[in-house]
Length: 127
Length: 397
Ligand SMILES: Cc1ncc(COP(=O)(O)O)c(C=O)c1O
Image 1 (cartoon, chains in turn brown, green):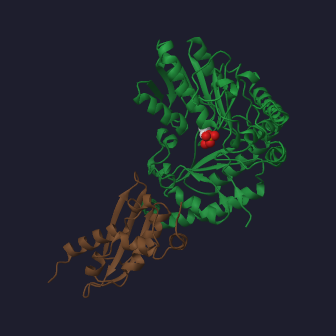
Image 2 (cartoon, protein in one colour):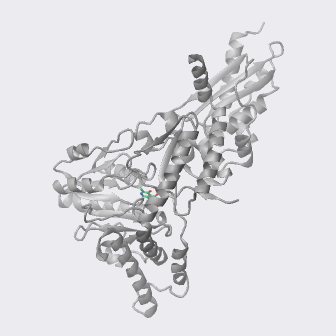
Image 3 (cartoon, protein in one colour):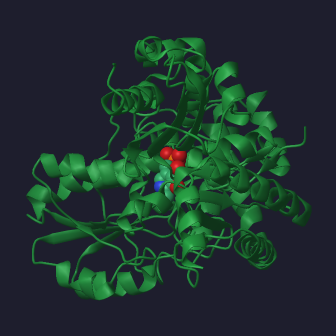
């Protein structure tokens, strides 16, 4: 297991963990079969579309927890449009890279973010 | 930081007596045991003494022992050698093995199956046991070999080799036993157990990595994996790993005397540890057969979390354990042993193996329980499955 220091840091002391009680968007991705489940909670400003708060719950390996933590850190303060541009690769890069076999299945938080945002957009069409 | 090593099923440290014993063979005693001069002859004597120790440990004769590079080689040699030798000679091209074998038996059998070997993989029940009735029913006229491990490396389950040996004998089928996790820890008697082929590995009993041995019952010759010089009576060509071989001899000599005391002492510690974990950490379960397990091992699943996180956190706290979780193996699938026991996936992913050794102390285990409690609570606090479960609990109340 060749995790970078940054991955270990986000795994050992993850940021933004837990349920967000006043969330107005959320999404879950993954299943127990593949060993990773990521759930994201977002609080979006209904006027500006800015992600004011975001948190995660993750069942998964060290990389799954670290990428979830990093994704929430990177998404906080972005607008919906900006956050939709955030990619898995950017998350991995910010962590100093991930072992190859973790790139795919344990780096899904960006996908969960996109899913939550798209569902939010459908429910709140632009006026 | 002091390290607490609880992964003895993966490999054991080299014991001090073994280290002392091999030092001369890293120095002045460097000869090739096949050489006729003095340098060679002294090494030959040491190699033959080691062979005698192996034979004595499993109640075989020296001439039935071949040194190898370990159990992976030994198991390959038996399965591939059997396939080469017996498929034509006796037309018995069917073998029976189990779903919970070590990958070196499982993948080798699967490869041979692709080449035309007929292989039956016996299933196991929810605690990992095989059914002897099912085994007997699987034997057909073309069945030539049964291959079953003595002790499973992940659960510690002990398989009833003596009774399996009786069944094999009754039906005139040969028996191969992967005893990598057994030799040096429990009594093994190839005669009483009716074993035809047996493999063992030095680094599982405080000798060195990269050296092992195989027992071939006198007369059961199979084609060798390695051809070349005439070392090991043509059964395994290649200049002997003398340091590894001498280490095996010394480690087994000591193990025979210590086995009974270890079985009491280490079992007491394992049981104490297991009870504390089960009592003090909720939603926790032992995987394997509690009534038939090697005294060194406990495999525990911690519901709602994934095992890699557990080993990473324990490692940071100075504790070495291993997991059957998908994510740590690189295979992306949970351990075949645990899944073949039909353990629900959420539990299989958190299966964590603690394997104790001669150096393990009660203090080590107390510290491990403390760290573990904290680790499990923390990882569960991240888990959506745990959150959902707890909310449902509250609703129910
Ligand atoms: C049951 C079993 N068989 C075979 C092996 C392979 O042994 P070796 O490391 O000597 O190749 C191991 C150890 O990993 C084992 O536990």
